[in-house]
Length: 420
Image 1 (spheres, rainbow, N blue to C red):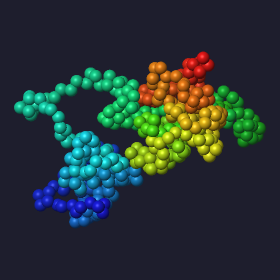
Image 2: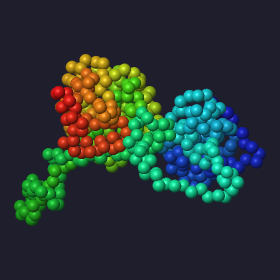
Image 3: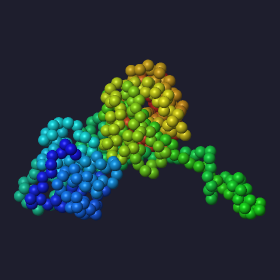
Image 4: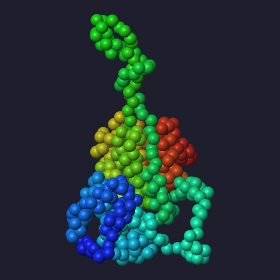
């Protein structure tokens, strides 16, 4: 906060009302701020005073922030709400890149666009007005929502590469609500069960010792179930840039959704090298998580070396994360410049190490797609399922591919095309 100018308190200012408006903006940005915290904030500022900006900032932060991941959102909303007298113009420049605000044209920081959306919720947007609306301020506006469902269906099937900025924002919100269900795996271990299918002779004899050897009832047992791991290998090369960002939003939602079934979710990115971003995706805030992942992976929008990346994964990580029937999602277009023999060998080794290897390829969206590239020819025989991954609907269909062991997607058709 050292780079912020001093806060000027006007003579007729209404500080309590401004704090209430600030709390409402925080609530829109995702922070759990209720009326009780608003009253606590007003009392805290009254006790701490309003003389230094650092004291004011930390006083409100102590009241409104309860988790570490909320600090980034609070800082951005505070900076936009309290610092800049022309903050509305600046926020419009964040929401609409074609409008130039008081700030220079730059990429928004983590949580900055979310803060702008929260503060612009009640702000008037520029746009044409009807003559009746200008003359009659009390006129009611009727909204026809009959086509809302069809618009959502269109957005689900729309290619990520063809989406506008507003559609991308809506798609990210839909991806945040998606889940990736999975069935539990039966193991050889058992657990006590009242109506189990198998008798538990060991527990029966142990219980009989308490009664002098008399068997009062036969104990039963059932197989113990456990959840598998999900491992995501995402290509972040130049040809996959538009798709990898959306896929990572989806992976972040899956990794942070409670009760979804997965034991653990491991995420790796690769372009010219392999990068483990698992710990970065554990952050609750998706903007902060992807910013940290982007800083960790230094090969965004670069070349592609799929064979070398799979070799590094098989050598360094396969024994750590692929145990106990893990499912692997390989997100790539298969356009590789490395040796096709190395790629085929490492893909075969990866398939033998996991329970299912599912290849998600955005190029499969084309009707006339054919496995002509050397990398695609090398990968295709060694995957269990081959599916498209260019839209929200295609990512929703991954649940069926994971649950159904017999689902091979388009693999059989393309293998037949290879044999011709």
